[in-house]
Image (cartoon, rainbow, N blue to C red; front, side, top):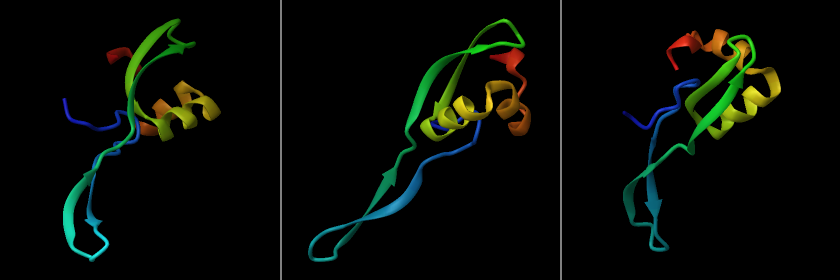
Length: 78
């Protein structure tokens, strides 16, 4: 499975590591992903999703059902 947030679709970013002498080497900036079990009230069960921490904060603010509907996710698959 790829390192990608299942809600927002966030993935790794390419960038440069710049040394003191300004030599640039390529690096990969990974997303802060977490496996979380979240209680889905409407489905009356636990849902296990791989989330970015930004998506986790959004779920805590707006609720799982609203975020999943906006992202176009079917929570019955998880």
